[in-house]
Image (cartoon, rainbow, N blue to C red; front, side, top):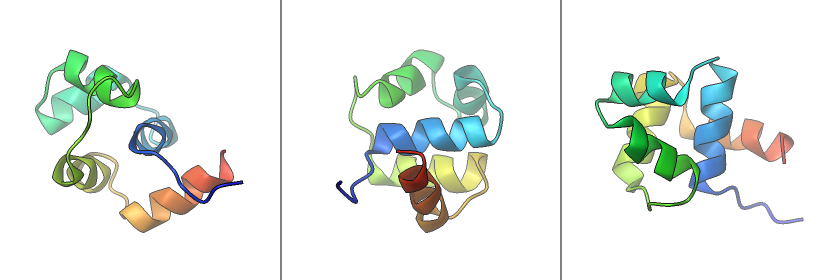
Length: 74
């Protein structure tokens, strides 16, 4: 089993952990819902700065902590 966790999985796990909808995350981060949906569906690559911004500013988590949680859910 790989230790890698993709960005789309991190986003989904973080969002579900916080009980948020995709629209909630998009609005709080200031992006379109469609853009966020694509990030979770691997339809669009996400910049590292946006990934870390969503994790910190919207989910109120450290990326390392979310990574560990996401690994346990795989």
